[in-house]
View 1: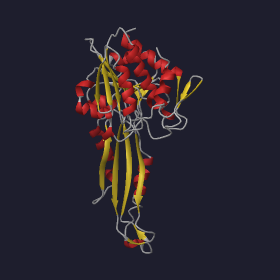
View 2: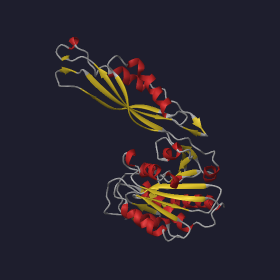
View 3: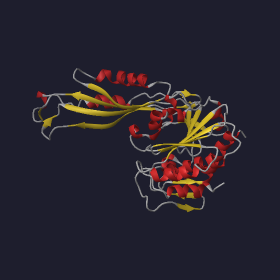
View 4: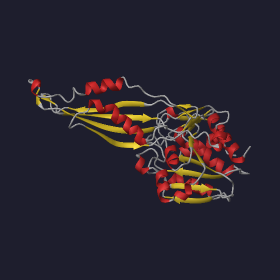
Length: 351
């Protein structure tokens, strides 16, 4: 077995900013092509490796190969039991675990699919996992999935849904010296912002995981000139909802919340959304992974939602602290790597 910290450093040393993952994927492809019990498929810059051992269940292990833009020249640095560098936590530590599992696991109790996919760090429309589900969905068939996002080697089950709305409020333009002759659209926002400040968020517990919803203003725009009463103002709002509501139910909730503040000519436009995913810890494979490990709700959105949409329960479980992702101090510790590796290996081999 290779040293997981050194393997992580090797992967960090191969730049793979979104849309430039090809060289890293080719390295992974070359290594896994030498494993006799794996079949290899490449869909663009996405690589899928699968066993076909006629086991009763199939577990999918997935991770993204791309990183955000940053310092790709300095590469990795190992100090004591820590690997520093761009993408070390998000998520080349997780990729190192997957790669070593694919090469060293023996005596499988479950069939396994490894998915190394591109373009997670950019808009959802470019996501490599979505590309595979569209172009070669049979390669992603399975009973349960583990996404190797950094979770400090704890279980973060499911994920919240997210959606953004653009609210437009109308007014009547006038000279700022005679404001009574118009109606200030920006001032109309005050009651809406006040309501958002007092929003009563839900904290539902689902499969033992407590979620916490949110409805927040994330952008405001309005104004014509320094001497004009504005006749329009817009408010950008983000809603995070628990997975006991589907996207339609969550959208209806938001629209009902804003209804008392809307008038003729105003509008509430849903501009983007991504669905939630249930925790899925009731599945035997995921329950086995979570045995003895702290399990909590994923309060953000992750690609587990892609699996959930296909009826495949999925969790987030990987090495590294998510709060360090995309920072100058990004790093991953040896203990996190080894705990993640041993936990998944135990389930693959039925130990």
